[in-house]
Amino acid sequence: MTNAADSGRIAKRFATLKAAGRGGFVTFLTAGDPDHETFEKILLGLPDAGADLIELGMPFSDPMADGPAIQAASLRALGAGANMGRTLELVKSFRAQDDDTPIILMGYYNPIYSYGVDTFLTDAREAGVDGLIVVDLPPEEDDELCVPALKAGLNFIRLATPTTDDERLPTVLQNTSGFVYYVSVLGITGTKAVASAEVERAVARLQRHTALPIAVGFGIRTAETVRDIAMIADAAVVGSAIVDCIANNLDEEGRPSDGLVDKVHDYVRELSSGLRS
Image 1: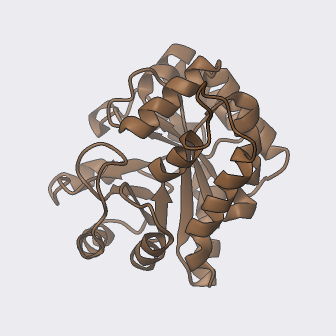
Image 2: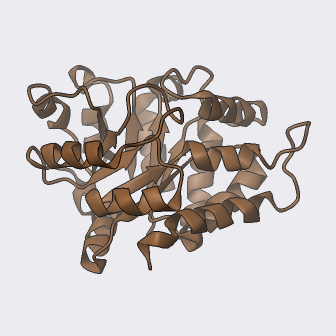
């Protein structure tokens, strides 16, 4: 299935990266962590720090596929008043400054369902969201959200894992658009290191099934690994390590310390540095 987003920001960004001869850098942060105002400052500075695409986690009280770092980030954000409406406000604020960098909302179906699917798709599109990654909706449930999202002009990005075999892949890829997110390690986020040789084999296999860009995430924590993965795939995704940077710059009461925003941007700049050298 094709949709209006096939020529939107995500497609344009990957075309630009290809023309530049380099892989992309994708950042993941939980929207509203550690609080709305601090996060807005972090978000607005990500492109200048080196983020080519931005994934925003939709805060949820039971993020079952995420490790301790992102679980804690969701709880911090929810405790500071985060909800779907405020997440979309962050996107709208970002779009007032940056109309080029793609934003993908990532997370679980429950917050979308609670908001109301039709209302969510309308509001997300109007706010400037480009795509969705919903980790707990399998392809068999595409009519629930995936197909309506595509019709609304949003990319629906699917996860592939080391256990997604050649028989399963065509089903996974059927309505996927924007890019394919390859989960490079088994298990929850932020708990294992990625192995470049295994990723290279996996990306080659995925490329036999799809012409979509391949982004690789989970287990990437250093500039060297970002560079190595982005030489194999179309983009490298870093999430838990950036979330840890936020957590490590909170005081004992969970409030942001002086310089937290700058430290996060400096870390993102460090992670992305190898892609532009």
